[in-house]
Image (tube, rainbow, N blue to C red; front, top):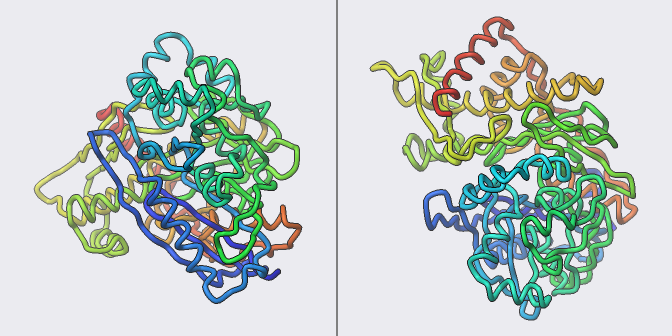
Length: 485
């Protein structure tokens, strides 16, 4: 067996990447799918479109190759997005509710006011926010009492995108998820790794709906839909897959993925640290029986800010053009963009905050706004890392560098700005497909196949800005955030 296939199901597209055992990409395919915005604050996906595009890209990546040459399939996915389907037919009952969706903000606030926040934090490591899966499932069952009755009879299944794809890949034989995805639902006990009965009662969700929880490297069955039988051996939520793919498997190692959102994780080993600074505690990818943990902070609007410049403001035709436009001016001219289009994530956790452009003058133009928008990605990430370093240092864990991946990490201007704000080096490996590589590495581990580590080649961005100047820029950013809060 000479290859490992990674399926990377993301927020805006489905991808498949075929790795050889030296960790090199031999083939890849990608297909976008439609985003649905039925009401302000609502974001939905068609589960059938997700399945169709993922299956098609897998077939494209394997074109001309024998399934017998593929040791295993690793699956990684957008987290928190949830699907509800019929077990008998395998068909989704409604569109998937996406992680960005805010329709359950009022329900989360009601649970906070009822005094449930601390119990939820202690059991899950998370906070009560529409971001997570439980209130999405609860919303469906409240809207459709007949669905609740069917769920209690065991006729329906629910799960995050990994569970949906596993069900379809195995033709209904496997309803499972891994610990990383399960830890993002508000329903799994972080420390036991099992569905928590008290949380199920709090959200009024039948246990019969939910998948079996397994380690990230485990037997997830086989698929026969790619020309032959291939084992599925690895599953992890996209950010934990990226953490694993970046080689961050020891306490203090951290990475930031610059995708639609930005997701910064720091591995904390076998210890679950309770954040005192608005971060989440989550499961890291698990091989074997020993639980692994991480601190996480999420920025809702990362690369999506550039998409907004492109599509909403029509500043350029391609997202790659943003760096050229931003470099055409020496700085943002005092303009600050706070991209709270869907609220603010860590460390603020304010679902009602909305975006703003501050500091505009008659001299402000597209270039200044584009540069400020890019800078906003780094500002938000710096907020998260500052909180993370405080939590980790209390446990004797230190940070020496930040490893980066994701589409926007290719932007040199953004990476240098990030290093300047943080005051630590930013390391971008030559292989920035850390998420897909992590999924492939987990599957390879389960299959007993040695997959070479991702290339150590890359570029290191050293801080160039004086710390006093960086502090002033961060203070201006915090003042702008306080305005939108």
